[in-house]
Amino acid sequence: MKYLDDLLGKQESLAWRGDLHVPVSGIEFDSRKIRKKNCYVSIRGFVKDGIAYVSEAIGNGAVAVVSVHPPPQNHRQVTWVQVKNDRRALSAIANRFFDDPSRQLQAIGVTGTNGKTTTMGLIQALLNSEAKTAAIGTLGMNFPGCDQGTKLTTPEAPELFAFMAEAVKAGCVNLVMEVSSAALSLRRVDDISFAQAVFTSFSGDHLDFHQTLENYFEAKLSLFKKLGSDHWAIINGDDASGARIIRELNCRYLTFGFSEQADIRPLKYAFSLEGVKAVLQTPLGKIDIQSRLLGRFNLLNIMAAVSSALVKGVAAEKISATLASFAPVKGRVNIAHAGDFLVVVDYAHTDDALENLLKAFREITRGRLILVFGAGGSRDKTKRPRMAQVACRYVDWVVVTSDNPRQEDPQAIIADIVSGFAAGFSNFSTEIDRRAAIEKALAMAAKGDVVLIAGKGHEDYQIFRERTVHFDDFEVVREKMGANHA
Image 1: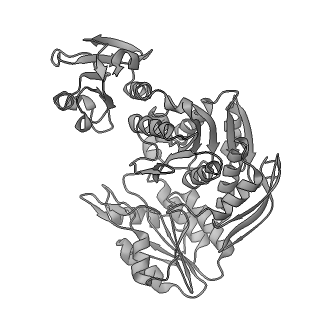
Image 2 (image 1 turned 45 degrees about the vertical axis):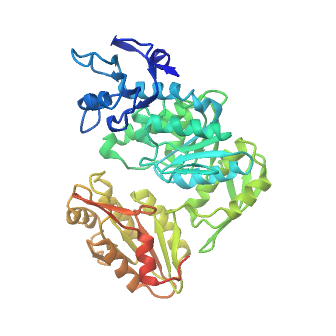
Protein backbone atom coordinates (compact mmCIF):
# COMPACT_ATOMS: atom_id res chain seq x y z
CA MET A 1 0.00 0.00 0.00
CA LYS A 2 1.24 3.51 -0.81
CA TYR A 3 0.79 6.44 1.57
CA LEU A 4 0.17 10.05 0.63
CA ASP A 5 3.09 11.50 2.59
CA ASP A 6 5.50 9.17 0.76
CA LEU A 7 3.97 10.08 -2.58
CA LEU A 8 4.29 13.79 -1.87
CA GLY A 9 7.99 13.39 -1.09
CA LYS A 10 9.72 16.75 -1.36
CA GLN A 11 6.82 18.20 -3.32
CA GLU A 12 6.37 21.77 -2.07
CA SER A 13 3.19 21.86 0.02
CA LEU A 14 1.84 25.28 0.94
CA ALA A 15 -0.77 24.01 3.38
CA TRP A 16 -2.57 20.82 4.34
CA ARG A 17 -5.35 19.48 6.50
CA GLY A 18 -5.94 15.93 7.65
CA ASP A 19 -3.85 12.79 7.89
CA LEU A 20 -0.95 12.86 5.39
CA HIS A 21 -0.20 9.21 6.16
CA VAL A 22 -3.47 8.13 4.58
CA PRO A 23 -3.26 4.99 2.37
CA VAL A 24 -3.79 5.69 -1.36
CA SER A 25 -4.90 3.09 -3.91
CA GLY A 26 -4.45 5.16 -7.09
CA ILE A 27 -3.87 8.61 -8.62
CA GLU A 28 -6.43 10.35 -10.84
CA PHE A 29 -7.06 13.85 -12.18
CA ASP A 30 -10.41 12.91 -13.79
CA SER A 31 -13.11 12.86 -11.09
CA ARG A 32 -15.17 10.39 -13.12
CA LYS A 33 -12.40 7.78 -12.87
CA ILE A 34 -11.92 8.06 -9.12
CA ARG A 35 -12.27 4.80 -7.20
CA LYS A 36 -12.20 3.92 -3.52
CA LYS A 37 -9.16 5.35 -1.66
CA ASN A 38 -7.83 7.19 -4.74
CA CYS A 39 -6.03 10.53 -4.53
CA TYR A 40 -7.68 13.22 -6.66
CA VAL A 41 -5.23 15.75 -8.12
CA SER A 42 -7.31 18.76 -9.12
CA ILE A 43 -5.92 20.30 -12.32
CA ARG A 44 -6.73 23.75 -13.68
CA GLY A 45 -7.67 23.11 -17.29
CA PHE A 46 -7.94 25.59 -20.14
CA VAL A 47 -11.72 25.58 -19.97
CA LYS A 48 -12.59 24.40 -16.45
CA ASP A 49 -10.88 24.08 -13.09
CA GLY A 50 -10.83 20.58 -11.61
CA ILE A 51 -11.81 22.08 -8.27
CA ALA A 52 -15.39 22.19 -9.62
CA TYR A 53 -15.45 18.37 -9.53
CA VAL A 54 -14.11 17.79 -6.03
CA SER A 55 -17.49 16.75 -4.68
CA GLU A 56 -17.85 14.16 -7.44
CA ALA A 57 -14.34 12.84 -6.75
CA ILE A 58 -15.05 12.51 -3.02
CA GLY A 59 -18.39 10.89 -3.75
CA ASN A 60 -16.64 8.33 -5.93
CA GLY A 61 -14.26 7.41 -3.10
CA ALA A 62 -11.34 9.86 -3.02
CA VAL A 63 -9.55 9.96 0.34
CA ALA A 64 -7.24 12.86 -0.52
CA VAL A 65 -7.31 15.98 -2.69
CA VAL A 66 -4.20 17.75 -4.03
CA SER A 67 -4.88 21.21 -5.41
CA VAL A 68 -3.48 24.71 -5.84
CA HIS A 69 -6.50 25.85 -3.83
CA PRO A 70 -6.21 26.05 -0.01
CA PRO A 71 -8.16 23.65 2.21
CA PRO A 72 -11.81 24.75 2.20
CA GLN A 73 -14.17 24.89 5.16
CA ASN A 74 -16.11 21.91 3.80
CA HIS A 75 -14.87 18.51 2.59
CA ARG A 76 -13.25 17.82 5.96
CA GLN A 77 -13.74 14.08 5.51
CA VAL A 78 -10.70 13.93 3.19
CA THR A 79 -7.05 14.94 3.50
CA TRP A 80 -6.43 18.16 1.58
CA VAL A 81 -2.98 19.29 0.35
CA GLN A 82 -2.36 22.66 -1.26
CA VAL A 83 0.57 22.74 -3.70
CA LYS A 84 2.24 25.48 -5.71
CA ASN A 85 1.96 23.78 -9.12
CA ASP A 86 -0.81 21.25 -9.76
CA ARG A 87 0.66 19.72 -12.91
CA ARG A 88 4.10 19.40 -11.34
CA ALA A 89 2.47 17.66 -8.38
CA LEU A 90 0.51 15.30 -10.64
CA SER A 91 3.69 14.09 -12.33
CA ALA A 92 5.69 13.72 -9.13
CA ILE A 93 2.94 11.88 -7.22
CA ALA A 94 2.11 9.55 -10.13
CA ASN A 95 5.78 8.75 -10.64
CA ARG A 96 6.26 7.78 -7.00
CA PHE A 97 3.05 5.77 -6.96
CA PHE A 98 4.40 3.61 -9.81
CA ASP A 99 7.90 3.35 -8.24
CA ASP A 100 9.79 5.66 -10.62
CA PRO A 101 9.58 3.26 -13.58
CA SER A 102 11.65 5.28 -16.06
CA ARG A 103 14.76 4.68 -13.93
CA GLN A 104 14.33 1.00 -14.67
CA LEU A 105 14.21 1.66 -18.41
CA GLN A 106 16.57 3.27 -20.90
CA ALA A 107 14.22 6.07 -22.00
CA ILE A 108 14.57 7.85 -25.33
CA GLY A 109 12.50 10.96 -26.05
CA VAL A 110 11.80 12.00 -29.64
CA THR A 111 10.69 15.57 -30.23
CA GLY A 112 10.28 17.88 -33.23
CA THR A 113 7.56 19.40 -35.35
CA ASN A 114 7.59 16.61 -37.91
CA GLY A 115 8.96 13.08 -38.13
CA LYS A 116 8.40 12.02 -34.51
CA THR A 117 6.08 9.07 -35.14
CA THR A 118 8.11 7.43 -37.90
CA THR A 119 11.42 8.04 -36.14
CA MET A 120 10.05 6.57 -32.92
CA GLY A 121 8.74 3.52 -34.78
CA LEU A 122 12.11 2.99 -36.46
CA ILE A 123 14.00 3.29 -33.16
CA GLN A 124 11.67 0.82 -31.48
CA ALA A 125 12.15 -1.70 -34.27
CA LEU A 126 15.94 -1.32 -34.18
CA LEU A 127 16.12 -1.69 -30.38
CA ASN A 128 13.64 -4.58 -30.37
CA SER A 129 16.18 -6.49 -32.45
CA GLU A 130 18.27 -6.74 -29.28
CA ALA A 131 16.01 -6.13 -26.27
CA LYS A 132 12.32 -5.73 -25.49
CA THR A 133 11.37 -2.10 -26.14
CA ALA A 134 8.21 -0.19 -25.25
CA ALA A 135 6.86 2.81 -27.18
CA ILE A 136 4.50 5.70 -26.44
CA GLY A 137 3.21 8.06 -29.11
CA THR A 138 0.49 9.31 -31.43
CA LEU A 139 -0.50 5.77 -32.44
CA GLY A 140 -0.73 4.48 -28.88
CA MET A 141 1.40 2.70 -26.29
CA ASN A 142 2.85 -0.72 -26.94
CA PHE A 143 5.52 -3.31 -26.37
CA PRO A 144 5.72 -6.86 -27.73
CA GLY A 145 2.54 -8.56 -26.53
CA CYS A 146 0.75 -5.35 -25.47
CA ASP A 147 -1.00 -2.62 -27.45
CA GLN A 148 -3.01 0.21 -25.84
CA GLY A 149 -4.66 3.24 -27.36
CA THR A 150 -4.22 6.79 -26.09
CA LYS A 151 -5.87 10.09 -26.94
CA LEU A 152 -2.71 12.21 -26.68
CA THR A 153 0.71 11.97 -28.33
CA THR A 154 2.21 12.17 -24.85
CA PRO A 155 -0.44 11.08 -22.31
CA GLU A 156 -1.02 12.65 -18.90
CA ALA A 157 1.35 11.55 -16.14
CA PRO A 158 -0.79 8.84 -14.44
CA GLU A 159 -1.33 7.06 -17.76
CA LEU A 160 2.35 7.45 -18.70
CA PHE A 161 3.74 6.02 -15.48
CA ALA A 162 1.15 3.24 -15.26
CA PHE A 163 2.16 2.04 -18.72
CA MET A 164 5.87 2.30 -17.95
CA ALA A 165 5.32 0.20 -14.84
CA GLU A 166 3.61 -2.44 -16.99
CA ALA A 167 6.52 -2.33 -19.43
CA VAL A 168 9.02 -2.89 -16.60
CA LYS A 169 6.96 -5.78 -15.25
CA ALA A 170 6.87 -7.31 -18.75
CA GLY A 171 10.66 -7.24 -18.97
CA CYS A 172 11.15 -4.22 -21.24
CA VAL A 173 14.65 -2.77 -21.18
CA ASN A 174 14.05 0.32 -23.34
CA LEU A 175 11.35 2.93 -23.80
CA VAL A 176 11.09 5.23 -26.81
CA MET A 177 8.43 7.92 -26.78
CA GLU A 178 7.22 10.93 -28.70
CA VAL A 179 7.50 13.98 -26.48
CA SER A 180 5.16 16.76 -27.56
CA SER A 181 5.78 20.43 -26.86
CA ALA A 182 2.50 20.57 -24.93
CA ALA A 183 3.60 17.69 -22.70
CA LEU A 184 6.85 19.50 -21.96
CA SER A 185 5.08 22.77 -21.19
CA LEU A 186 2.46 21.06 -19.03
CA ARG A 187 5.10 19.17 -17.00
CA ARG A 188 3.87 15.68 -17.94
CA VAL A 189 7.38 14.32 -18.43
CA ASP A 190 9.16 16.17 -15.62
CA ASP A 191 9.83 12.94 -13.72
CA ILE A 192 10.94 10.78 -16.64
CA SER A 193 14.68 10.09 -16.65
CA PHE A 194 15.75 10.28 -20.28
CA ALA A 195 19.00 8.65 -21.33
CA GLN A 196 18.72 10.00 -24.86
CA ALA A 197 16.75 12.68 -26.73
CA VAL A 198 16.24 12.98 -30.49
CA PHE A 199 15.50 16.22 -32.37
CA THR A 200 13.84 15.68 -35.76
CA SER A 201 12.88 19.16 -37.02
CA PHE A 202 11.46 22.54 -36.11
CA SER A 203 8.94 24.70 -37.96
CA GLY A 204 5.81 26.69 -37.25
CA ASP A 205 2.97 24.82 -35.52
CA HIS A 206 0.90 24.82 -32.32
CA LEU A 207 0.93 28.62 -32.04
CA ASP A 208 -2.64 28.37 -30.76
CA PHE A 209 -1.07 26.82 -27.63
CA HIS A 210 2.40 28.41 -27.42
CA GLN A 211 1.50 31.86 -28.84
CA THR A 212 5.00 32.46 -30.26
CA LEU A 213 7.60 30.41 -32.14
CA GLU A 214 10.13 31.18 -29.43
CA ASN A 215 7.88 29.70 -26.75
CA TYR A 216 7.37 26.64 -28.95
CA PHE A 217 11.12 26.23 -29.43
CA GLU A 218 11.86 26.72 -25.73
CA ALA A 219 9.41 23.92 -24.95
CA LYS A 220 11.29 21.57 -27.29
CA LEU A 221 14.65 22.72 -25.92
CA SER A 222 13.62 21.88 -22.35
CA LEU A 223 13.80 18.15 -23.17
CA PHE A 224 17.49 18.47 -24.03
CA LYS A 225 18.22 20.56 -20.95
CA LYS A 226 17.17 17.53 -18.89
CA LEU A 227 20.10 15.50 -20.22
CA GLY A 228 23.25 15.05 -18.15
CA SER A 229 26.87 14.33 -19.02
CA ASP A 230 26.28 10.56 -19.36
CA HIS A 231 23.39 11.01 -21.78
CA TRP A 232 23.14 11.48 -25.55
CA ALA A 233 21.40 13.93 -27.84
CA ILE A 234 20.68 13.05 -31.48
CA ILE A 235 20.35 16.24 -33.52
CA ASN A 236 19.18 16.98 -37.07
CA GLY A 237 22.17 18.95 -38.29
CA ASP A 238 20.34 20.11 -41.41
CA ASP A 239 17.80 22.02 -39.32
CA ALA A 240 18.90 25.52 -38.29
CA SER A 241 17.38 25.01 -34.84
CA GLY A 242 19.70 22.07 -34.28
CA ALA A 243 22.66 24.41 -33.78
CA ARG A 244 20.73 26.32 -31.10
CA ILE A 245 20.05 23.09 -29.24
CA ILE A 246 23.68 21.98 -29.47
CA ARG A 247 24.84 25.22 -27.84
CA GLU A 248 22.65 24.41 -24.82
CA LEU A 249 23.72 20.78 -24.37
CA ASN A 250 25.49 19.40 -21.32
CA CYS A 251 25.73 15.90 -22.82
CA ARG A 252 27.33 14.01 -25.66
CA TYR A 253 25.70 14.28 -29.08
CA LEU A 254 25.63 13.02 -32.65
CA THR A 255 24.34 14.92 -35.67
CA PHE A 256 22.64 13.44 -38.73
CA GLY A 257 21.73 14.93 -42.08
CA PHE A 258 22.75 15.40 -45.70
CA SER A 259 25.47 17.91 -44.77
CA GLU A 260 29.08 16.74 -45.07
CA GLN A 261 29.60 17.93 -41.50
CA ALA A 262 26.98 15.53 -40.08
CA ASP A 263 28.24 12.56 -38.05
CA ILE A 264 25.75 10.25 -39.80
CA ARG A 265 25.25 11.18 -43.46
CA PRO A 266 24.57 9.48 -46.80
CA LEU A 267 27.52 8.94 -49.11
CA LYS A 268 25.10 8.02 -51.87
CA TYR A 269 21.35 7.56 -52.08
CA ALA A 270 18.50 6.98 -54.51
CA PHE A 271 14.75 7.53 -54.17
CA SER A 272 11.99 5.79 -56.07
CA LEU A 273 8.37 4.75 -55.66
CA GLU A 274 9.74 1.47 -54.24
CA GLY A 275 11.59 3.18 -51.41
CA VAL A 276 15.07 4.42 -50.62
CA LYS A 277 18.55 2.97 -50.99
CA ALA A 278 21.57 4.56 -49.36
CA VAL A 279 25.03 4.06 -47.98
CA LEU A 280 25.45 5.86 -44.68
CA GLN A 281 28.74 7.09 -43.30
CA THR A 282 28.81 6.76 -39.50
CA PRO A 283 31.50 7.10 -36.82
CA LEU A 284 31.59 3.27 -36.75
CA GLY A 285 31.88 2.79 -40.50
CA LYS A 286 29.56 2.48 -43.48
CA ILE A 287 26.06 0.99 -43.31
CA ASP A 288 24.06 -0.11 -46.36
CA ILE A 289 20.41 0.90 -46.15
CA GLN A 290 17.43 -0.35 -48.12
CA SER A 291 13.97 0.70 -46.98
CA ARG A 292 10.35 0.67 -48.17
CA LEU A 293 9.89 4.16 -46.74
CA LEU A 294 9.43 6.82 -49.42
CA GLY A 295 11.16 10.14 -49.89
CA ARG A 296 14.06 12.30 -48.79
CA PHE A 297 12.49 13.22 -45.43
CA ASN A 298 12.19 9.55 -44.54
CA LEU A 299 15.90 9.11 -45.14
CA LEU A 300 16.36 11.81 -42.49
CA ASN A 301 14.07 9.83 -40.15
CA ILE A 302 16.10 6.70 -40.89
CA MET A 303 19.36 8.51 -40.12
CA ALA A 304 17.93 9.76 -36.81
CA ALA A 305 16.96 6.22 -35.84
CA VAL A 306 20.31 4.77 -36.95
CA SER A 307 22.10 7.40 -34.83
CA SER A 308 20.02 6.42 -31.80
CA ALA A 309 20.62 2.72 -32.38
CA LEU A 310 24.38 3.16 -32.78
CA VAL A 311 24.54 4.96 -29.43
CA LYS A 312 22.73 1.96 -27.95
CA GLY A 313 25.26 -0.41 -29.48
CA VAL A 314 23.08 -2.08 -32.14
CA ALA A 315 25.31 -3.74 -34.76
CA ALA A 316 25.36 -2.49 -38.36
CA GLU A 317 24.16 -5.86 -39.69
CA LYS A 318 21.09 -5.77 -37.45
CA ILE A 319 20.39 -2.18 -38.44
CA SER A 320 20.45 -3.04 -42.15
CA ALA A 321 18.29 -6.15 -41.73
CA THR A 322 15.70 -4.41 -39.53
CA LEU A 323 15.33 -1.41 -41.84
CA ALA A 324 14.86 -3.65 -44.86
CA SER A 325 11.84 -5.31 -43.26
CA PHE A 326 10.37 -2.23 -41.56
CA ALA A 327 6.83 -1.44 -42.74
CA PRO A 328 5.68 2.19 -43.00
CA VAL A 329 4.04 3.54 -39.86
CA LYS A 330 0.26 3.82 -40.19
CA GLY A 331 -0.81 7.09 -41.76
CA ARG A 332 2.73 8.14 -42.64
CA VAL A 333 3.27 7.97 -46.41
CA ASN A 334 1.12 4.87 -46.80
CA ILE A 335 0.20 3.58 -50.23
CA ALA A 336 -3.59 3.25 -50.25
CA HIS A 337 -3.84 2.21 -53.92
CA ALA A 338 -1.29 0.99 -56.44
CA GLY A 339 -2.32 0.62 -60.07
CA ASP A 340 -1.99 2.85 -63.12
CA PHE A 341 -1.61 5.65 -60.62
CA LEU A 342 -0.56 5.74 -56.97
CA VAL A 343 -2.62 7.00 -54.04
CA VAL A 344 -0.76 7.93 -50.86
CA VAL A 345 -2.22 8.88 -47.47
CA ASP A 346 -0.10 10.96 -45.10
CA TYR A 347 -0.50 12.88 -41.84
CA ALA A 348 1.26 16.05 -43.10
CA HIS A 349 -0.66 18.92 -41.50
CA THR A 350 1.90 21.74 -41.32
CA ASP A 351 3.43 23.73 -44.16
CA ASP A 352 6.88 22.26 -43.45
CA ALA A 353 5.60 18.67 -43.41
CA LEU A 354 3.57 19.30 -46.56
CA GLU A 355 6.58 20.77 -48.35
CA ASN A 356 8.75 17.79 -47.40
CA LEU A 357 6.07 15.43 -48.69
CA LEU A 358 5.52 17.30 -51.96
CA LYS A 359 9.23 17.78 -52.69
CA ALA A 360 9.83 14.08 -52.15
CA PHE A 361 7.07 13.05 -54.56
CA ARG A 362 7.90 15.71 -57.11
CA GLU A 363 11.30 14.05 -57.29
CA ILE A 364 9.94 10.56 -58.05
CA THR A 365 6.61 11.14 -59.84
CA ARG A 366 6.52 10.62 -63.61
CA GLY A 367 3.08 12.09 -64.17
CA ARG A 368 1.03 14.73 -62.40
CA LEU A 369 0.99 15.35 -58.67
CA ILE A 370 -2.56 15.83 -57.35
CA LEU A 371 -3.06 16.96 -53.75
CA VAL A 372 -6.06 16.80 -51.42
CA PHE A 373 -5.68 18.68 -48.15
CA GLY A 374 -7.35 20.92 -45.59
CA ALA A 375 -6.45 22.37 -42.19
CA GLY A 376 -7.69 21.66 -38.69
CA GLY A 377 -10.13 24.06 -37.06
CA SER A 378 -9.60 25.61 -33.61
CA ARG A 379 -5.85 25.31 -34.16
CA ASP A 380 -3.00 27.51 -35.42
CA LYS A 381 -4.57 29.61 -38.22
CA THR A 382 -1.31 31.13 -39.42
CA LYS A 383 -0.18 27.96 -41.17
CA ARG A 384 -3.23 27.76 -43.48
CA PRO A 385 -2.09 30.25 -46.16
CA ARG A 386 1.47 28.96 -45.83
CA MET A 387 0.28 25.45 -46.69
CA ALA A 388 -1.36 26.85 -49.83
CA GLN A 389 1.84 28.69 -50.78
CA VAL A 390 3.73 25.39 -50.53
CA ALA A 391 1.10 23.47 -52.50
CA CYS A 392 1.06 25.75 -55.52
CA ARG A 393 4.86 25.49 -55.85
CA TYR A 394 4.91 21.72 -56.29
CA VAL A 395 1.60 20.25 -57.43
CA ASP A 396 -0.29 20.14 -60.70
CA TRP A 397 -3.75 20.27 -59.12
CA VAL A 398 -5.05 20.92 -55.62
CA VAL A 399 -8.40 20.00 -54.11
CA VAL A 400 -8.88 22.03 -50.93
CA THR A 401 -11.25 20.38 -48.48
CA SER A 402 -12.06 19.91 -44.79
CA ASP A 403 -9.82 18.31 -42.20
CA ASN A 404 -11.22 18.39 -38.63
CA PRO A 405 -13.21 21.66 -38.58
CA ARG A 406 -13.94 21.38 -34.86
CA GLN A 407 -15.61 24.59 -33.65
CA GLU A 408 -14.96 26.57 -36.84
CA ASP A 409 -16.95 27.04 -40.04
CA PRO A 410 -15.38 24.63 -42.59
CA GLN A 411 -15.91 27.11 -45.41
CA ALA A 412 -14.04 29.81 -43.49
CA ILE A 413 -11.07 27.47 -43.02
CA ILE A 414 -11.02 26.73 -46.74
CA ALA A 415 -11.11 30.47 -47.46
CA ASP A 416 -8.07 30.98 -45.19
CA ILE A 417 -6.19 28.32 -47.17
CA VAL A 418 -7.18 29.66 -50.59
CA SER A 419 -5.99 33.14 -49.60
CA GLY A 420 -2.45 31.79 -49.64
CA PHE A 421 -2.37 30.65 -53.27
CA ALA A 422 0.00 32.67 -55.43
CA ALA A 423 -1.50 35.32 -57.68
CA GLY A 424 -2.48 33.71 -60.96
CA PHE A 425 -2.55 30.15 -59.58
CA SER A 426 -5.81 28.62 -60.73
CA ASN A 427 -5.10 24.89 -60.69
CA PHE A 428 -7.31 24.21 -57.71
CA SER A 429 -10.87 23.50 -56.72
CA THR A 430 -12.63 23.48 -53.37
CA GLU A 431 -14.90 20.80 -51.98
CA ILE A 432 -16.11 21.10 -48.40
CA ASP A 433 -17.03 17.39 -48.18
CA ARG A 434 -13.80 15.41 -47.70
CA ARG A 435 -15.18 12.21 -49.24
CA ALA A 436 -16.30 14.08 -52.37
CA ALA A 437 -12.93 15.84 -52.53
CA ILE A 438 -11.02 12.54 -52.46
CA GLU A 439 -13.34 11.06 -55.08
CA LYS A 440 -12.83 14.12 -57.29
CA ALA A 441 -9.04 13.74 -57.11
CA LEU A 442 -9.22 10.01 -57.87
CA ALA A 443 -11.43 10.66 -60.88
CA MET A 444 -8.84 13.09 -62.25
CA ALA A 445 -5.87 10.73 -61.93
CA ALA A 446 -4.32 9.06 -64.97
CA LYS A 447 -1.46 6.64 -65.61
CA GLY A 448 1.76 7.71 -63.88
CA ASP A 449 0.06 10.23 -61.59
CA VAL A 450 0.31 10.34 -57.80
CA VAL A 451 -2.62 11.43 -55.63
CA LEU A 452 -1.55 12.63 -52.19
CA ILE A 453 -4.22 12.82 -49.48
CA ALA A 454 -2.74 14.81 -46.63
CA GLY A 455 -3.66 15.93 -43.14
CA LYS A 456 -5.40 13.08 -41.34
CA GLY A 457 -3.20 10.04 -41.90
CA HIS A 458 -4.07 7.36 -39.34
CA GLU A 459 -7.18 9.13 -38.02
CA ASP A 460 -10.46 7.29 -38.48
CA TYR A 461 -12.73 10.15 -37.44
CA GLN A 462 -13.70 13.69 -38.41
CA ILE A 463 -14.51 16.31 -35.77
CA PHE A 464 -17.26 18.86 -36.39
CA ARG A 465 -18.78 21.47 -34.08
CA GLU A 466 -21.65 19.30 -32.92
CA ARG A 467 -20.42 15.79 -33.54
CA THR A 468 -17.55 13.44 -34.31
CA VAL A 469 -18.13 11.00 -37.18
CA HIS A 470 -16.28 7.97 -38.49
CA PHE A 471 -14.07 8.91 -41.43
CA ASP A 472 -11.04 7.12 -42.80
CA ASP A 473 -9.14 8.33 -45.88
CA PHE A 474 -8.00 4.76 -46.58
CA GLU A 475 -11.55 3.44 -46.56
CA VAL A 476 -12.73 6.10 -49.01
CA VAL A 477 -9.94 5.17 -51.42
CA ARG A 478 -10.66 1.45 -51.14
CA GLU A 479 -14.38 1.93 -51.65
CA LYS A 480 -13.75 4.01 -54.74
CA MET A 481 -10.90 1.99 -56.24
CA GLY A 482 -11.91 -1.53 -55.21
CA ALA A 483 -9.61 -4.20 -53.82
CA ASN A 484 -6.48 -3.13 -55.72
CA HIS A 485 -4.66 -1.37 -52.93
CA ALA A 486 -1.41 -1.81 -51.06
